[in-house]
Every structure is written in structure tokens, then in C-alpha cells.
Length: 416
Figure (cartoon, rainbow, N blue to C red):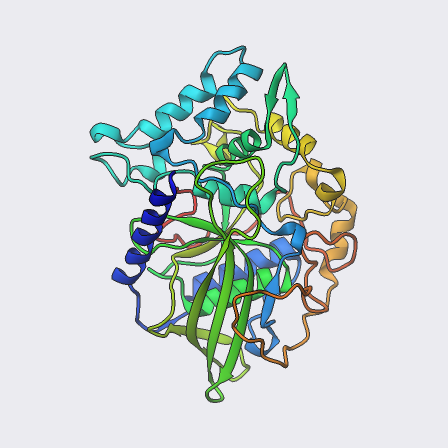
């Protein structure tokens, strides 16, 4: 996508946010809160902290864990076909199986057709400029270090740019963990709880779907700062800024450094007698987003957890190529929820030790809502920061989710 097209997409997203602005006051829905409590307990082995005063005012991932800025592979430009052509040469003897699947997938709704699955809501006309693989890039950049070296398979050389394309394709339709957003715009209380627990306590990047309405645009968040002003015993004003990586106009071997943007939120939070967040309301100068999410372990295309995915591309081959492209020491400290066995930071027998951490200490000082996030670690007693190694505060990593189905959001991250 050209820089002009990227700018146009962002303008469309911005217009979508303001034209579909969700201004009503809202209590966090009971089923949404209960689901977030259950999934945090599942993935981290600890309770979701819901007391406002106990939640950290700032959080970020370690520098090595900042998501890379990759391409979003617009459908109008062929999606991930360039990377898949190389894959077919290496693994299918030049038979364009994976390539043709992608070609049909991105072209399924053109000329009055209908795209499969989650893209079926647009049935006529040309391909919208925002259709692409932004969710695939976002998931890949959260779960994987940026590829650094060329890798050769069956005489075909995969560059870091090629490998990023394969990763984006792998995550296009893979399942994700829903972190809130059942309302037209995510409830301000849910936004605060999710970012402060997952990113503030856990130092784990979070995916966000930014646009409200039909347009769907995803990015990975890697830091935030908040300032809380107590208005009364039961109400507080919050100013929060987040930083998120943005997509590049084309895929490159090395993404540009510090290619990110700032987003500002301004909202009030209501608490109960115990100081627990119950409701939120955005002020008129605040941005709003659709939903938050976290990518889960990829599944083979065509199988139960990835029925819409590319069945002609082996995720085991792609992950093996990626592992060979990054240093071992970086991989070994890269902690994700729901890791593959090959990428598990802690051995399975150590997972039981992950439920012993103390809750984080209450935050006592306010951090200014400035653009540049601090390079500090998560508060003492928090779940292990992403990339930390051993201790008893590391998050639990079950291999099969046991939580009930999430409340259905208006959109899902498995959109471009």
C-alpha cells in the first residue's frame, strides 16, 4: 500500500470513529467482566485486579519486545502472494497451491462476489482499500521477534521480509483471546482494566481494533501512561496515552525504528465502596476504539481452530523458518500466553509455580500522560513481564483454554 493509501485508510478510520461516536454512559456488562476475570486467571494464574488504586499508572514491554512495524498486505495489492510464491517453490515443487488459495481468498468478493467468512459483510463492488492482513501482522508482531536472517529451504532463500509475510498469513484466521469490546466502542472501564492488567502488570502487548463501524484496522499496543484525578469517593478522571506500532507501506527486511503513534483517551471511572471499577464514560475529546484482543497459538489452516486458514502452508515449517531467523537467546526470553511447545519459556513442570505471586502494590504517584512511555519494569509482585525468565511470578501457560465462550463483540480481530 502506498503512503497515500495508508494515510487515506487512517483518515477513513478516524472519520469512522467520530461519525460513529459512542457517547452514552455505561456500566461494564456483567458477562464481559466475568469473562475477563476468568481468562486472566487462566492465562496468568492470578486474579484480575479491579481496584483502581491497585492498578499501575504506566506500563510497557521491554525494549526487545516492542512489536515490529510490518506490512498489512492489502488485498488490492495481492495480500501475501509474494511470500507464498516462494513457499510453493520450496515446499510444493513450484505448484502454486498456497498461492492460489490466497489469490482466491483475497479476490472472493470482487466484482459482486462475497468473501468467505468474516469478510462476507461486503457483497458488492470493488475491494475496500482497508481490506488486508493487519490482524495477521499485529498477531505476528506480538508473538514473534522480528526475523533477522535469511533462511534457506530446499534451495529457496527466505528473506526476513518473506518470513514476515508468511507469519502474517499464518495468523490471518487464527483464534485470539477476546479482551473486551462488546459495546459499539469498548467500555472505558474495560479498556482501563485490560491495559493496566495485561500491559501494566504483565508487560504483554495487546492487539487493538481501532475503528468503530464497518472499517476494521488493527495495531499492537506496547506502552501506556495514565494520570488519575480523583473527583469524589466514587468517581475519578483518567487521562491515558498509549503507544502502538503502525504498519509500513511495504514489507522490508528490517522495519523502521520507532515507527509508532500515540493515541489519547480521556474518561471517567466509577467505583463501588471497595474501590472496584464498575463503569466508564468517555469525555468528548477522547479517542475511542472497537475492541482489545491477544493472539493465541496458531493452528494449521483448514483444521478446527483455523478453518479459514491456508491449508497449503504448514505452520510447523513456517515457525521452524522463523526460529532459524532469530537468535536463540532472544527466543528463549520471549514469553507469550498459549505458547507452542517449542517456544515455551518455562518447562511444563514449572507452570504450577506461577500462581504464587502477590498482587501488585497500590500505585501511589501519578504519571503524566505524555507521549513517551518509560522504560521501567512492571510493578513488584506483578505477573512476570513478557520476556522475563524463571520466577514464581511468571504467567501460567495452559495448552488448552478452559474458559467459556467470550461475549460476542461487534467485530473480531480476524479482519483486515
